[in-house]
Length: 387
Image (cartoon, rainbow, N blue to C red):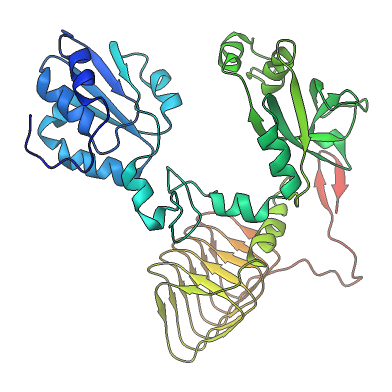
């Protein structure tokens, strides 16, 4: 075996090597690569086979790519949950599968990963690019909702009661909230419990999805899969009690931004703030972004990477500026979402707006939701005006 230092001792190492040493050709999937102990042993003991090395953890993948570089021509590295890896590579000649499922002792020992009792934070993400961590679930989800989900051992979907069910995918339930069917945007009322797209299914759902026909609009519909599923298994509707943000129309993004920015209790400034910048309340300034002198910021603001805010700009509440944007001299932006690679030229005025990617706004540009009669702005959608 290699003398490369093994960060921890893989379980059942000899048994694993013995299992795969006589295979003559094809791929073995290491569903949970970790720090590469099993994979290294398999590669060294059997020169005839190749590996598909999968993990969710970037730290483990990067370590193992370096550790196994001698065998790079015999390895396909894959990032993702092990439940998906077989389908992803079903075109390969798979001759064996190894799944060492669990949390690595190294993950438990690292305080910043939040798996152990001595962790610096509550995190527990195998994939640290995943936005949702255990911290948000434990501290922001309603206790009653968590208790119901943890105690219920069968299958469920999260739902919320809505005022306009004709806009949503609606569940029909019995008196015990067992789901009978789901209908997309029902014209005839069947209830107000809208699908929130968070499920616990039996693995049978994959077989159901593989066999549902194309709909009249040439799509494979989740509604068809769910309606077949409820014929086979009890399926419960769990109504959430925490705040529900309905992001249905583009302008609902502004409501969503406000929801999260209003919970920004501390600034996080990772790059350059020049002299004479005024910051009222809290901001996030990501790497490689710059606030130039005489910028004035009021209320909570989020500025992503590689963006620059030029002098005498006034940024107001609940504004989000995404990657690689330039907001030039003497611009005012309020309650807006400015998306990637957008330029806003001098002396422009952007209020309550969503500006898409790769937009170049000329100088003296004005956009706002102001009406002189103080009424709400209405937008035509499918022949009907919505406020």
